[in-house]
Length: 110
Length: 113
Image 1: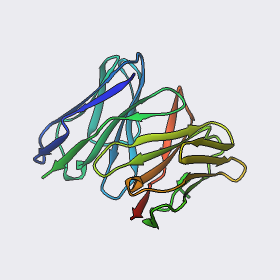
Image 2 (image 1 turned 90 degrees about the horizontal axis):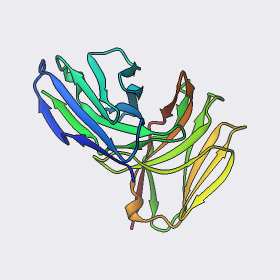
Image 3 (image 1 turned 120 degrees about the vertical axis):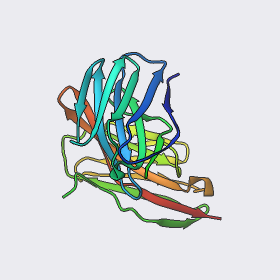
Image 4 (image 1 turned 180 degrees about the vertical axis):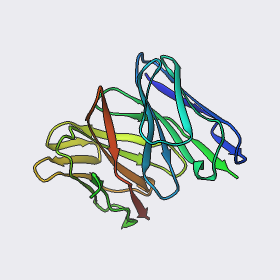
C-alpha cells in the first residue's frame, strides 16, 4: 500500500529565515505530487504540483518554491519566510481520479 | 462566484441523526468528485470519490452527485461523536496534463452525545 510522509511535523521559524519541508511517497511510482497550504479558518490553497521529476507548476506567485529531485520526493522551500507564510502545509499524491494527503507540517513564523 | 461553494457551518446534530453535507459548483468540466474528512490538526482523509452522477454507498456514508444541477452531497447515517470533524468536498477537471482539484472550504460537523 502507499504511504506518504512529511517532516517536520511542527516548525517555528523567525521571519526572514529559510525553509525546507520534505515529502516522500512510498509504494507507488511516478505519482502526481502536490503542495497545499491551509491557513486557519480557510480552505486548501494549491501551491505547486508536479507530474514528474523536475517538472513543477506554480499555482500562486509568492516567495515559496518547490523541487522534485527524485520520483517520490517533493520539497517546498523559501529563502526568506514572511509572517504570512504561517499555516498548515500539506503534501498530497494521487492518480487522476483522486488524491491522498500526508499528515501535514504546521509552520509558525514569528 | 467561486467554483465550489460549501457552507462552513458549524452543523451540530445529536448522535444517531442523519447528516447531509452539500456542495455546489459552477464548472461543468469537473469530472471527479470527492469527499474528505479532516480532524483537527490532521491531514484530510479521503472518504469517497465518484465519477458519475448517482449514488455511491460505503458503510454509513453515501455520496450523491447530480451533474445536471451541479450539486453533490454526502449523507452520514447513524452519526457518531467520532464523526465530528471538518468535511471537505473536492472536484477535479483536466488542466493541462494533470487533473487539478478544487476544494470547498469545508463544513464543520459536531455530533453531540
